[in-house]
Amino acid sequence: MKAAVIVFPGSNCDRDAAVALEAATGAPPAMVWHGDAELPKTDVIVVPGGFSYGDYLRSGAMAAHSPVMREVVARAKAGTPVLGICNGFQVLTETGLLPGVLMRNRSLRFICKDVHLKVERDDTLYTNGYAAGSVIRIPVAHKDGNYFTDDETLARLEGEGRIAFRYCSAEGTVDDAANPNGSRNNIAGLYNESGTVLGMMPHPERLADPALGGTDGAPIFSSIVERLQ
Amino acid sequence: MKARITITLKQGVLDPQGKAIEGALHALGFGGVDDVRQGKYIEVALSESDPEAAKAEVERMCEALLANTVIENYSYELEAA
Image (cartoon, rainbow over all chains, first blue to last red):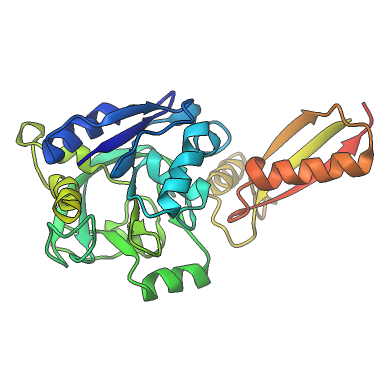
């Protein structure tokens, strides 16, 4: 199975993502520079975290229009799985592959800590290695992670089962106290209509190896391999 | 021509930065401040000299990149260079 990681000026989680992907797939992914209009043939694409283009204008806005992203959008529309993490999630919303927007955290602070997430479904490309309803611990590190969309879109996302993860307490309670950034309905990650595109603010690649202090993020990468191989 | 573009958050969209500024203004004794909304201001110098064509171009820029119309409104003024 072949994976690719998109690298923008300002990406800083690209190598972490590559390590997690290699652990899951057994082969190092292709690292694709943002200015490349050509994307190698690949089974899954990761848009990593960081501060692409210095977060100028809006987080992810400039990266969304880079040459390689045009190709990523085309591949995603043709069904290639695309995983956007943190800044990658912001980029995917700016391209329109995922609805809504990641606004400034309601606290106005950069939040860097482990949070707990409730896994909504266990029948998806990205979460088949978890049990539905289970609570996992994954770090967040962002200032613009406050998920917003209009009422109508929110109702559609909920109705279609497109929420991937919600912020919750260690015991699994989804409430405002467990919401680190003000996201509507505690949304930490969501799918596109076909479930092939996932955007999430937390960083599974940062807890995907025992040496990092935990492995709760690893099943996201192994789930993809499980489903695609 | 020059375009002066103003981008603001839509009504109903939470503006935590505006709220923080509002709180700071209250702390400074400006009790008459009822609400603060923060936005962006962008100036674009255009080689286009026809106002109608410039208008169309600025609108395309706003829709494609400068504003995220999920949460933001934009307005602009054009002036001859």
